[in-house]
Image (cartoon, rainbow, N blue to C red):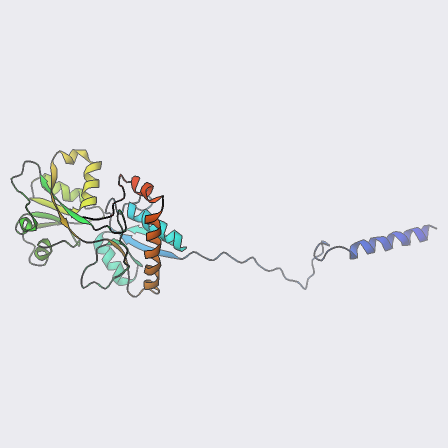
Length: 282
């Protein structure tokens, strides 16, 4: 009787094992090799450089990197791209475009004779934004700005490597007499200081750049003041012409920028920099 009972229990145990689902017995089949989990696809990253040009572009990694940096980063995010943004003196930005150390420049004016590629949607306070240059003069100065001709012979402070409207541009290529150029990662303070110290008659740079600097440094507003503006050009992301897929990236970037401009979050993006949307119409 005991032997029959033992046999019955053995049969029952074997039946239970045979009914378990494959792979759930706790015994690994040596003929089946575990498959490694597929690594998530790496997100493509665009490497862009720019000189410190506040409020367009500031220091990388800061809480506020610049409204154009935020704008481009959000547009690239919508494209499935990341942004590797670095600050360089402008002369080095140009050099890295030539050597291929960067994919592009984050914010630059289109210049004749330069082969950098750009899209059709600019960076600014809206999709039709066109930048202006602000002309500053020293308070108490007898010098007056009455139009572009006023800058033909005045002592003018400019940023090295930047392009300017005529007649400043002609003077940059014609001996530079009377022009004082500043350079470095953040040239704006030196530009304004030259004017405040009466070493030049006028200082000229992007309107948003100079207005933002004076808003954050009231001590300089006591010494310099706006004298007028010069209509200039839009600002664009620009890529190396030899960058693989550059034209396709720019086409997609145009569409993504328009999405950001039309989004409810765009006014909040600008508000972080004390700015508000502007359609650029004049």
